[in-house]
Image (cartoon, rainbow, N blue to C red; front, top):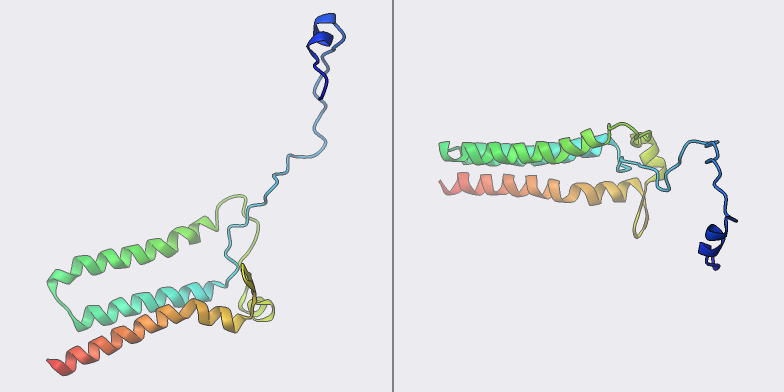
Length: 146
């Protein structure tokens, strides 16, 4: 590549050859793995906590004016977890999410190192569980104050 080939082409020293037949299918440099490495049960628990919070707050502060915002929140939660669930089922994705048993044995690799299943579950579910607790606390306070 360090020689200029224009002289060879002009002198007729270059020849055109047919493209060799591809022996193997084209392999992409990066394989697509659309799974997130966690069991489906953890995502289900997260969705259940978020929808549980909305159910607690929706029943504690039931009002016709809250019907549309609550429906919008439910839509966003379902879409926020539903679209990635559909994304993992697209064509070309050959990997499967970890089962609870595999997750319990191996844990998950993160950017900061390997986490055990217990630590990863705590990190994933702490915000949703605290949110449900906060909703219950606010509902109890509102019921006592009335």
